[in-house]
Length: 234
Image (tube, rainbow, N blue to C red; front, side):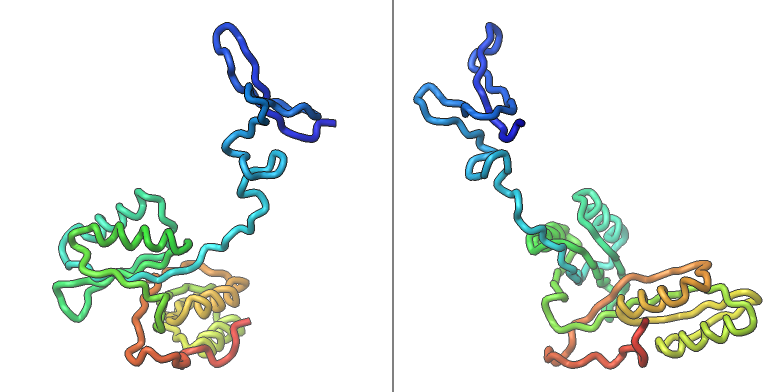
């Protein structure tokens, strides 16, 4: 039975001294000096296992970045194009005018380790129209997401159930049709996802979300957020 990977040296008229990988039972390759040869990829490893074999996989962390940009035409296309060209995993991107009409604020939610976060920050700072970039997720902040969802709810018990769920999650019904209702809900990502899971069996006809926006708390203290749903979702 073949149990190990070996690299052996073969010679031919065209390519003398060429290294070829084969599976061998024993007899490891030895160089001219008599020392066994270990390819660079396997140095420091056991058998045929590379250096990274057996290391635990890291779960990508969730980061929230806030960038203040000049309110000029094309800045959104410039920033989003830069992120897309480098393959960054962006969960959501929200942009809107700030208290100063000359500036807009972009809120990015991305997943990755600290290295990816630092790369995104540096790439954003290279753009001329970007004024400042801040990692909000490392501070005490408030986060919100706005959703409009159209749920199948004909007149009767189904419509009453949707209205009760909307009240529990501190949402409101903004439109009523013959066979559906539109509910508006704002809150954290977990709150929005919880409501979606509860109304999914009723039938979701359409769903629109703005993406997450965030702001650092003024006091900077670990205060408890007061906008949680009255009853746990699920």
